[in-house]
Length: 233
Image: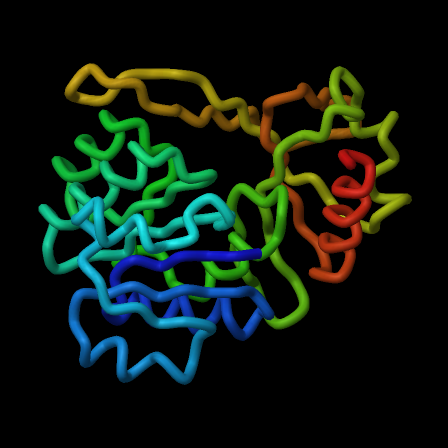
């Protein structure tokens, strides 16, 4: 996977280094040269440029990049401008950082679906979430076990957990399922709302587009994701 991290403060630099450690290609971008010097030997590439300037951004390999993360924190105006520019350039997947309610509403109004709250979420959690295809979110319990949110695969649509034999085939437990619907934020802009359906049972039915919350060993979770990726090819 190829990532571009815009903004190399504490959160951005930590995320860039953790993604690099997971064997991804990571390009770090910042306007401050001291941050570039501090990280240049720890990630794939470190570039000094102004991510709010269209001409400067044109030098980045955006078309070949899987995920762009706007991690600018101290300058909310620059964050919004860089995010708007990335949105205009139609990057494949755009994630942006928000520090307070109004900024988050502005990003939602721009159509940014994935928003980071560094004060609540760790760079390590996001690195693992981004590094595993198909994972919506994750929570690490210890070195071996995690709870992850995964989109329901097409082949599970309209089937019960009993029919799928999830525990038998993967030794994983589905704790609950969630349905994502469209709602409105305080500005009247579209916002995704997640509705939890309750504790799952053998008779719980899965539907395409829903999210299943899974508990299990990381190696078993990775096997499930790898099997699904092979089937989707």
